[in-house]
Length: 231
Ligand code: FAD
Figure (cartoon, rainbow, N blue to C red):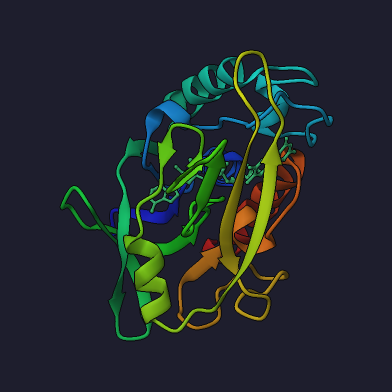
């Protein structure tokens, strides 16, 4: 297999898990739709970072978005066993009931022993700013519907949540309404998305809400569990 673990989404949860797994020697693919938004918060960090996390290496309370993004991306790209790359996952790749990778909008299929979805607020989001509504998971980052439709077709159920970003500097405030996996689809102990084998959910797309530090802690917890599972 190309990777032992393929993580879709290089936000706080996915990046943290990828970094921690790679540091344990696990071969990880970290696929994300834009390298310009890796590890990018909506607002500066406020909470202390979890001990031993990538977040603790690159930020502290008050660290601003682009600073955090640039430092984290540098470390992720420099980490042995970790392949960070830009691509959009459009469908799960299955062999029988087992997920063995993803199909991508760009064409190449990406194969792995385990697939982790860390999609944040990008499942059918609607971003409202003033009177304008866009299909975007954050400001200036469009969301594409393919993977959400594929998950719906495979029977997954979703709930809806909304979060607001206050006006900052010259940028007006906006809100994002997004889907997340419905409770019952995901096991908080094992991270498994129960309908299919080899598939895990991580971060906002399964929790529905929470802070950046919580997402980072969840990434660390998943890495610990998966590293044990993979031996
Ligand atoms: P994200 O950080 O959103 O990362 C997900 C990544 O997955 C994105 O980079 C996206 O490009 C990628 N992706 C999605 N689909 C695909 C695909 N099909 N193929 C490839 N890549 C894909 N928490 C706070 O502590 N403070 C705040 O101020 C705060 N404000 C928030 C405001 C809003 C509008 C929202 C929605 C949430 C906010 N949160 C806040 C909550 C939460 O901490 C953040 O959403 C956090 O970014 C979630 O981390 P994550 O890793 O789960 O997802």
